[in-house]
Image (cartoon, rainbow, N blue to C red; front, side):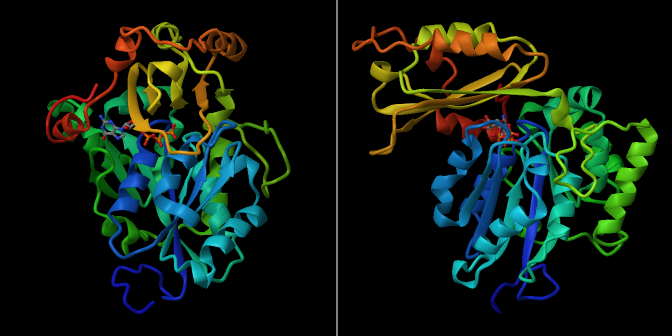
Length: 382
Ligand SMILES: Nc1nc2c(ncn2[C@@H]2O[C@H](COP(=O)(O)OP(=O)(O)OP(=O)(O)O)[C@@H](O)[C@H]2O)c(=O)[nH]1
């Protein structure tokens, strides 16, 4: 591949593998989609990992990728997949006929970046090389996220490039403060401000650690870091599944979280769903997926994204032949997943006719794409 000016790999025949991490809802999928659309001549292979039984993120990027996505499916990648399994996926994307220039692993929002980095470093595939850790941060929620999850500081210290995203949702006075704070926590990594993950792809493909850092994190560095963490919190606990060399999951963000996957082939009634969403518990941090409103809108499915109190629906035409399903993943802490499941069940309704006002509640949360672009340049997206 001699005509790849931005190839960051020391050996041009090796394909860099980037790990894209960041807390729930920070904008990883948005950034990946941006890269896929703006990568110029480069071919990006993606490995998408989701926390929850339905692969919503995989669905969100699949259209753009065709055969160059592999999805790791259920569970957090750092716990559910071992190195040899990851190698199988890398093998698939790195085969010469796929002509892939860079591979991006989008981690679930609850994954431990250092586990993923370690897995890539441990890969035995000679065609791939670890290309760096990209951490996406939600600038608008940064303070609150750090309070609840001080581990974020450790993740930033490991990152090679930090994308400080959602600046459009951050008050002018806070932007510089957040950027400064991120810079101070990220140990010399590049810090890139962004809205909707719109960063220059060349920046990212080039994101191997810069010269002045100690060099790319090695396997041993990662071990040392983890040992230091373990000593700091004096913990012994682990949900050991024996799949990691060390099998210790203490302190991983996802240990404190629960997820519920809901699938229905019966459409949901929009008013009932809105009642459900309006009264969602505080601990229900993230909802994502697709909703079928049946007779209320036969042409579109509604992609839904909730992050904290933020809620948006995005109608998108059904693809002919696609099964008409509602597929939702709910992630939260201290949530009663059984009760939430029952509430969603109660939203099912296959009425053959819709009354004309039924979608109003949903449409309040639909944004015109033009307006969205304007917001990126100025106003508040919430
Ligand atoms: N206002 C605003 N919204 C954004 C921005 N970037 C992403 N979003 C929205 O934030 C929501 C979450 O974005 P995703 O890209 O799905 O986040 P993620 O990190 O992949 O989420 P998880 O898979 O849950 O970890 C979506 O509704 C995005 O449209 C941004 O810069 N500004």
